[in-house]
Length: 251
Ligand SMILES: Nc1ncnc2c1ncn2[C@@H]1O[C@H](COP(=O)(O)OP(=O)(O)OP(=O)(O)O)[C@@H](O)[C@H]1O
Ligand SMILES: [Mg+2]
Image 1 (cartoon, protein in one colour):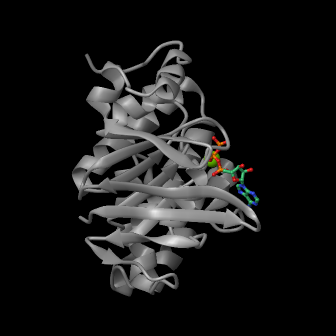
Image 2 (spheres, protein in one colour; image 1 turned 135 degrees about the vertical axis):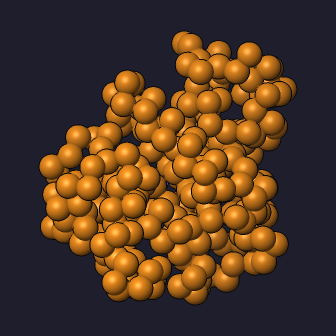
């Protein structure tokens, strides 16, 4: 379990500053939803947290320790990311077993003799059959493939999971089951979760607090209870008003 702190990070693409002075805190085992309109900088923040894109300034801390811009293997392992499109993280030429085994060996998660067993356990964790291990990513449905991407992220036993719109490409019915799985895994494994979505219903079901971004900046940060009871900022109210219904709304 680890806490995650994002402190005043700014991120640019060339001359364009996509993210300005963004700060938020996720307590160990906590969950935060990063929301906002398209282009507001959510993915950019998520990628900076995962160490995939450097910040111009500001700091990202785990358990109060600053992560260097060049992260060590253990630091890379500790923060894992799940993407909207699972193909981003799954090599289409490798079976699920090959994908998972390679990671387990590279990060020395279990002794060689335990790799097979661990692969089977990972399938169980994401509620797929053990026979799934010998298939290729393209052989699965969208929802199954996202479970495999989740297994890949969890294989290295991260303490922080960054999920960038992990269900927005899925059918509504499949979405619900993947969200349910995420909720359960987060609780069981004590994961600290940074969840990126423009779907406020899903954020409401999953997150303890909400950070609203607009044009690269944080415009509101509150507990989910306060946010969904009535956000303070006009922009947040607009976002909420744009949601036709909130599945799984807390009342
Ligand atoms: N690789 C890149 N090169 C140049 N500009 C980029 C790059 N990635 C993102 N941007 C720009 O940075 C801004 C923030 O983009 P980002 O992808 O973080 O938004 P987002 O909130 O994730 O949007 P969406 O909801 O559509 O996923 C946008 O203006 C985008 O065009
Ligand atoms: Mg995005």
